[in-house]
Length: 165
Image (cartoon, rainbow, N blue to C red; front, side):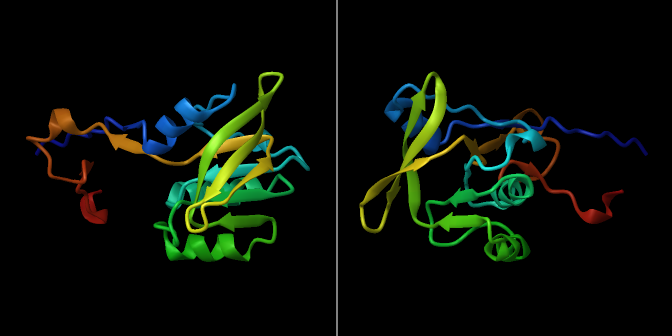
């Protein structure tokens, strides 16, 4: 028997969030964060995470360990991530959640992010939030297309059971 390990990974896709920010920002830009550095949460500076899946929930929890306050911004009424992560986020005193909100604009001072404008999708109201950092935990695209004829996929991800090893 021959076993082949295929792991082409995933690229960070350009979601509506990124297209909206690219066209609506005033001087600030947003890139994907490949790895959140523990030094990102340096004390009292507020940070925000955008997203609603496991990655966004995990990022918010990680950042909350080293920073005063983290705001988790999600465009829906509920998270898509695992319930156990949602419960941990909801219990953290230094994490606040903005459900049904989107980031409309990034603002900068001296070339660095200083604030974001978020819009409440239900009321239509917008507000400005001072921030030292914004982490986008949205939009991955699996790179499985070259192997699609050889390996079964679900939503582009390989269909592998826990019993495969």
